[in-house]
Image (cartoon, rainbow, N blue to C red):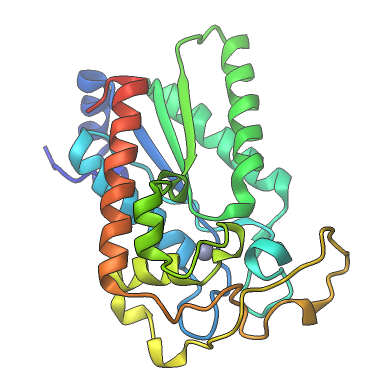
Amino acid sequence: MSDSVFIGELSWKDYAARVEADNPVVLLPVGSLEQHGHHMSMNVDVLLPTSVCEQVARRSNALVAPTLTYGYKSQQKSGGGNHYPGTTSLDGATLTHTVLDVIREFARHGVRRVAIMNGHFENSMFIVEGIDLALRELRYAGIHDMRIMTLSYWDFIHDPQVLETLYPEGFLGWDIEHGGVFETSLMLALYPNLVSMDKVVDHPPAKFPPYDMFPVVPERTPAPGTLSSAKGATREKGELILEVCVAGITRALDQEFGAA
Ligand SMILES: [Zn+2]
C-alpha cells in the first residue's frame, strides 16, 4: 500500500482500505490565487496550508485531500483587493458549495472526521457555511457521526514570546499580514525559489478607514499589493512559525478527534 499522505497519490483501493481500517482525519486545505506583492508568487495561499497539512498528517496519521486552489474574493483590508491582475476568485456561494460537495463525497466514502485548513483570510465564513450545509444535509440522510473542524493556521501563533520573536517592533494584526513577514518567512522556509527578497517593497503598514467602500478605492492599498512590509522576513522565522503551527494543530486534532 502506498504510504503517501496525499489522497490524490493513492489508488482507490488503498484509499478505501485506509478509511475503513483507521477512520483517518481527512485534512482539506483551502487557498486562493491572489497577488502577494512584487516579491512572491500568487500561489502562496495554496502552498502554505498544503505544506502545513502535509506535516500535520505525517505526525498524526491523517490524510490530505487535494487543495482547493481558488478562494473567495480578495478584500482590500485583508488581501489588498480583488482589482489586481492575476487575483482570480470565486463567488462566495461557489466556494460554499464546493466545500459542501467535497464533504458529501468524503461522507459517501465512509470518512467521518474532517479538518478544513484555511490559507486565505477571506474564505473563513464561506467554509463555515459549507460545513453547516453539509452537516444539515448529512443529518437528513441519517448520517449523524460526521465531525468537522475548521481552522486558519495562523491562529495557532499566539504565544507572546513567539510574536515578539517574529515582530520585534510590535505585531499589527493578522489582517494586514498579507504578503508580509509571516507569509514571506514561511515561503522562505518552504519554497525559497518562489521568493525574491530583493523585490520586497518596504512600506509602512497599510492604514484603512473603519469601513469599506465598493467599488474599492485602489489607491488605499499600498501599490505593491502587500499590506505590511516583508523586509523582516527570514527563513528562521518561517521554520519557527511552521513548528509552532504544526505542533499546535496536531495537538488540536488529537484533542478533538483522538487522532494523533
Ligand atoms: Zn496569503
